[in-house]
Every structure is written in C-alpha cells, then in structure tokens.
Length: 409
Length: 228
Ligand SMILES: Nc1ncnc2c1ncn2[C@@H]1O[C@H](COP(=O)(O)OP(=O)(O)O)[C@@H](O)[C@H]1O
Ligand SMILES: [Mg+2]
Image (tube, rainbow over the protein chains, first blue to last red):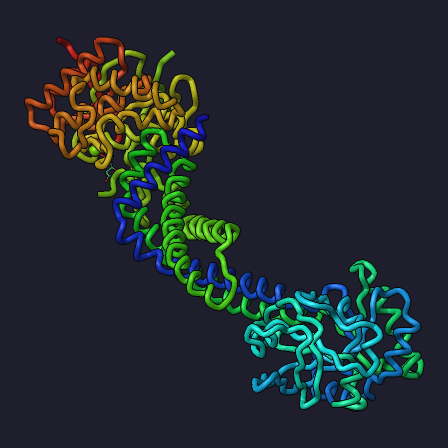
C-alpha cells in the first residue's frame, strides 16, 4: 500500500516534470524515436519476409526429398567444380530407386524445360514444361481444379496428354472449353485433360502457375532423350524424414555404385536447406538493423541522461525540500527514474506512431503487419533505455545532502 | 526524559586546509512543550544547530538523542524517517513547491508517511484551517502573499503531528506586521503544547519564546528563561 502511494506520487511528479518541459523532452527523444522506428520496421520486415517465404516454400513440401545431381546451395567454387563432374541421374536409376524404396509414400521423376505453348493462334512463351508421372500429383502437392491428372498408363506411354497450370490456362484460353482441346508444346500436339489449381508465386519471383505437365515418356520422346532427372520422394510423415533420407542415400549410393568411403555423387535436397539459407539472410538484416537500433538507442540514451542531469540540477532545491520533509533516497530515485522512463516511453510512442504508416507502405512489398509482440518489445526497450539512462542522474539526486540541496538557489 | 539532549555536540566544516568550527561542544536539553528562541550574530552557528536538531545533518562528534533515540548514528534513510515523523520545518524562504497547490504542499509529508489519499486530504485541510488558510487551499504559492505562503509552510510542518517545530528565521522575509501575525500562530501552537524552537535575530520576536539561547562562535553564550 505504502509503496503504491509512493509510486503514485513519483509518477505524478515525473509526469508533471515532463509536461513542464514538453519541447525539451520531445527533442531529446529523437534518438529513441529513430531506434524504435528502426527496430519495429526491421522486425516487421523480417516477419513479413519470413511469412512470405514460408508461404512460398510450402510448395516444396515439408516432407519431400529432392534427389538431384546438384545441391541447391553450393558454398564454394571448389565444391561447384566437384559437383560439375557428377554423372547425371538417369531413368534407370530412378526406376531402381522406385522399385527398392518402399518406406516412402510416393516417388516421381521430374524434368523441366522451357518451351512455347500454342493454342489456336495464341501462344505463351517461357512456359515451364514438366515431364513426370502420375505420382507427381502426390509428391508435388498440387491439386486439380478441372478434369484429371495424367494416369499411370499415360505416364510412360505415348499418349500425348497434358495438364495445364492455372496461369497458362488463362493466358491461352478465352472462354473456350479447355478440357479436350489441343495445344502445341514446342510444336507437338497435346490434348488437355486437366487444369491445376492456382499455386501462386515462388519467392515472389516466378509463377508456379505458368506450367504444363506432360508424361515423362512424351518429354523424352520429343524434347530431351536423356535428361538429368530430379527424383521427388514424398515421405508422407515428417517424423520419418531423416530415416527415409538415410534409406534413399544408401540406395542411391548402391544404384550409382559409389565406393564405400567415397563422397555421395548426388544431392538429397529438402525444404529446410532453403530455410537455413534464408535464415542466414534474415540474420544479416537483423544484425544490421540491431546495430542501427543499438547505436541510435545509445545516442538517444546519452541525450536522455544529459537532460536528466539538467533536470536534477534545476530541481536541487525541490529535492532538498522533499528530503527535509521525509522523502527517502528511494523516493527521489524512483521519481527521477520514472521521469526518464516517461520521456523514453514518450519517444517510443512517437517512434511507433511513425513506424505504423511506414509499415503500411511496406505492405506493398510483403505481407507485413506490426505485431503486438513488436509493439510490446519497442515499449519495453524504451523503458529499459529510460531506466539505464536515468539511473546515474537519479542516483546522484537521491544521494544529495539535504542541507546543501536546500541552500541551492 | 528530555525530548532533546545534546551532549558535547560539535560540527566542523572542512574548507580546504582550514577547519571551520561551526559548533563547538554544545550541550543542551530541551523538554517537551518548551518554546525556545535561538539568537546570535551572523555566523555564530544558529543554522548549523537547527540542521542538526532537525536531523538534516549529523554532528562531527558528540551525541544527539531525540526522544531517547541516538540520532547521531543513524543512516540517511532512518534520518529521513525521523524527519518525517518527528520534525516540522519552517524556513525563512518558505520552501514550498512552486508548481503544487497549497493543499498538495501540505499533503507532502503525509505522502512520504504512506497515508492514503482520503486521510491525507482530511488532515491537510485541517492543518490549513488551523493556520487560517481554509479558503486558499487550491492556490499555488505564486498566488499567495508572503504571510500566506509562510502559513502554508507552517501547516505543512504541523500536518504529520511532529514532536518539534523548527523554524529558522521564519519572519526574516516578512514585514514586521506580517511577522507578528506569524508569531501569533507560533504562540498559539506553543500554548497548545507544541514544542517550538526558532532562530531569530530580532529581540521582540525572541521574546515571544519562554527561553532564549544565545550562541557566539559556535558555543552557547547564555541560556535564560524569558521574564514576562
Ligand atoms: N556547508 C558549509 N561549509 C562550510 N562552512 C559552513 C557551511 N555551513 C556553515 N558554514 C560556516 O559555519 C559557520 C556557522 O554558520 P551558520 O550556522 O550558517 O551561522 P548562522 O546561521 O548563525 O548565521 C559560519 O562560519 C559558516 O560560514
Ligand atoms: Mg543562518
């Protein structure tokens, strides 16, 4: 009870002191304002990028392994040169893996090329042509919005059918019935049997909907006879990801005749490699942001400390009076700490008020929202700066000798 | 038992190489209910003595007992507590908080005593009533005359019902008529049993008290009852 009364009194005094010097308080908070704007914008940006990234990355599937010739992320030139010497992944290797691997839910080969696609006199260029099997429906995590996907029989066989992506469909068709119509992929006729669901963009850069899926047999027949395959392995259960990965690795080493003790001559890529690399990037952003934040908060804190020393000097007589009347050291200490915290909180609020419209601007670039956590963090940081910056002046005030303080004019 | 007992109390100030002996082995007792005036030429140690009596300062040597408690050995916070409970100060320059109303100024000691808002207000109003300022409670010090300001200060000194009222030249900044009005309040308080110690250099003010202590060069030169 007593503490609450004292705290209340200290708050009143602090508030009164800040109000009496609004302009001065406002000016000294500049550093805090910059710091808080930086920290909130940076936090918002990182969260926004992360959210956008996770949305994109989810098309890779959290439980899908990509068996490929190259690693997604190669760290050195030497490593790149080494990987260039790797042999391609062949059809028979895929078949062998598919036959021997029985712990995975689905295995699909995948080859992609770029070709123009034509319908009547319209054409779409730069379309990704994916050659695969019926299993791609499972491994690729795609959905069908119209018609059907390619069947097991069509997969390796000669029937020229295709499934078009949502974007390609709207690019080529103007209200004509899509299913059953004939499109030309790189000059070869294909019958459209289905349309894929819209998937959005990958990393905000390229559309996943501007694609055409054709049977792998058709792709090797017309475009690339001996492609370098990617083998998609859908585990079906994230908890078994590591086990299946090890099994795939063992099988691939056997299939490709890798000698014991030699390094793998293939890569097993998965989503979390993207995440790891991505986290490194956001880590760099965060480090730079934190540096700017730290610097401005430091400069801001020094400014606040300075102004608090001024405030203590100006009010020495008041301190003397309060002490003569019975204020203890802690009363004076808390009074000035709260004043410093009020000023910093004030700066924090200005910072947030500036950051809010900037966040809206950021929203054009990424799914950015200023989270409650960030607002809380900013206010918390402001208060901490207030305590740290105010401590020295408040401590000095608390220790003033009442007789000397009273003599002060 | 005496309310105040000083036993060979000294207070020295060190000014570089020089030591100023502001008080030299002063021994003194004051009982509850006494009305004492302290006189002496400028620099004789009156304010130093008041600061010691008021626990704003501690002696260089000697023992000061207030209400049986050895004040000379207390730390900062204990002294603050004693000042809050036992001492009411009235200063020559009033020393009111300029931005606070009369009422808030008077409430201040009660805030540090930890009293709840309602009781604080009640007691502060009573104290202001007592010094004849019941109608001015929401005025700021700037809006009050000198005499009224000093009344607020007296109300503030009284409000926590201290054992002693200490006044260092309370009429020093007032004209003689207002000064006598303030002295009338002190006389009245003394008549109702308050212990009052005041510093003055005016004989007729000092003669309001019932005992006059005269200091010279930090020592007690005389200590006599006032004959009326
Ligand atoms: N803080 C101080 N530092 C140094 N000397 C002081 C201090 N306070 C008082 N003195 C000296 O102590 C002596 C007594 O001062 P004071 O008690 O203020 O006298 P009075 O109130 O009787 O005029 C004077 O010589 C004064 O200069
Ligand atoms: Mg003096």
